[in-house]
Length: 144
Image (cartoon, rainbow, N blue to C red; front, side, top):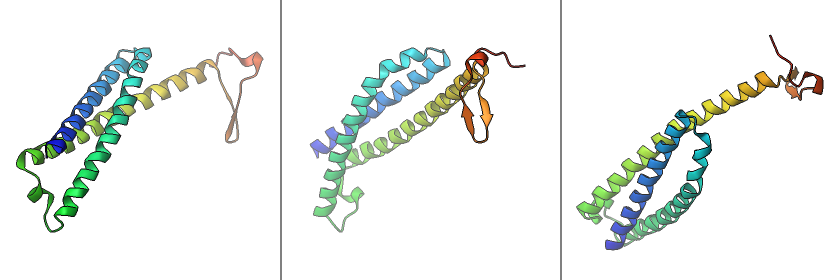
């Protein structure tokens, strides 16, 4: 059970760091410091990769426990402390999910803003369903 507890602690720690980085990125977007967001990219990739492998190990451990005790529920098998850690893990996953939803809304908003800015500076001609590239003469045409 000690190994199970260590796995959960590691997973929770990684989720906490991902949550912190995500909310930090949201603040950077709010403060128009978009270039600094890429500073977290590598750390997030490492955390996500480690999280996925540790989660797979945790799933295997849970499946082995359940296979050894097919008639018991997980709450019957796990000691109270591990059950609390598992509940905390679930809560942290939901918190990360919420942080990612907020982050994605900001990313979409900024993408739409920059796209509208580019289209205002470089107008595109609508031709049916397709947009054509601006002609050199119309490159910096001011639209009314």
